[in-house]
Length: 375
Length: 183
View: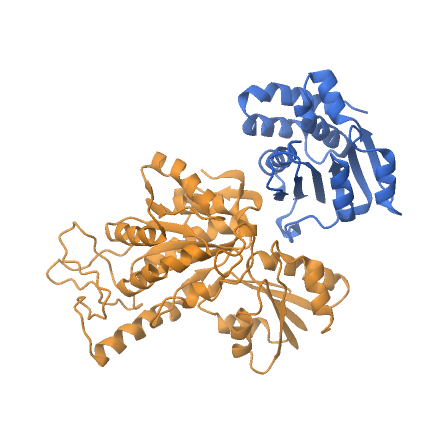
């Protein structure tokens, strides 16, 4: 049975994760993600799940990886400084193709920065911080309701593609209270982990199915399991040769990029026939949406393109939404990050970065003032 | 229908609880879409305290998370009236706790704006009629709801019962009803 609550995005994520079947959470407290952890510490054990505080973020991410290999749907949550510590584990999860959800609640950096306040400056950190070749899905909600919905989706992608998925929010959204419809476990679509289709002697842990994602066996089920961080063949044996390595990393990347239909999800508001399109995401998109409505009232043909998945970058979706646009504004609460992707994709269009640093959320007036200079 | 409600005062006056009660009442018991944010100083008492509540009946009407053009505002202390009055619209309905805010203070900050100002000594009323200034926030909320009717009183009472610690529930509801009856 669904129920309606008045909760902030952090709690909505916790509820979404539990609705999706979360059974293990490990974490280390960090502002502004701690209340998500605290809430789960109270609620998840009531449902038979396990919540553990580890000695740090390194311990936490590795525990989550271990739990996933024991069959759990597992999650951790942190913020920029903690994410930095988790990067090594994230790389391990990518290489071993471990399904898990990593919630990152952005705060202002670098380093400890401003713990209680927001920016959107970690959109590259979440995508590129680990070393080596890889691609990782990053979902970015703009409301408490969407935080719930995308938490469910994050687990579904993780299970479908046997991959870590990052759910990216920020300090402002984390503590924005809204009405959220909390759907029950039976009211949402749940993607199940694909079990082995062969008996143990024939099963290969890294053999891809048609969609490039392998099936998964757990410890304790009789399967030989080699969770290998070194470059490996389909059985998991170390294979330091170009051919095996290239096959592996090409598949790791293609597994995400070619399945972007499972990930890409954009909201478009009045983009059809629009002369100007604003690209914005997360909490800042709320302000951009206010600006679009304001400029529309003045008769300007402005639209909003808002990705709910930041990575992989949905080039086709963006191209289509900006077909009629003369100018594309990229509004971000940072010094200009996703704008580089937009410029790369829209080579023949005028792309204008609107970088409004604001430790709260960039107010619509600041954004519209910047945009008006270009109209 | 869309309302931007700004509530501001000093830390310790129960501003954040007031905001939570209003937000919860609207979201859970009045079927409205709500965005609520809060900001407060590091001090437990005496610092700045502010709650922004945006209410509407369609999800599409929610955008920027903070109040920009309040059409309903409640100020519980003069300092916050001065600090945040620029966020209040022309023709807004404004409530001020006259225990702490003089009429001249309001006149001074409002400039040319036409406000419908309600002066009531919420804190004095709470202290004199209910024996404690600590429920002044609920007296003020009652008055705000009685005048603006943005959320039904029953929804507020449900929210108080859900949010407030048991030993304060009855007194808070009494204070809320007292506020409702203010004319």
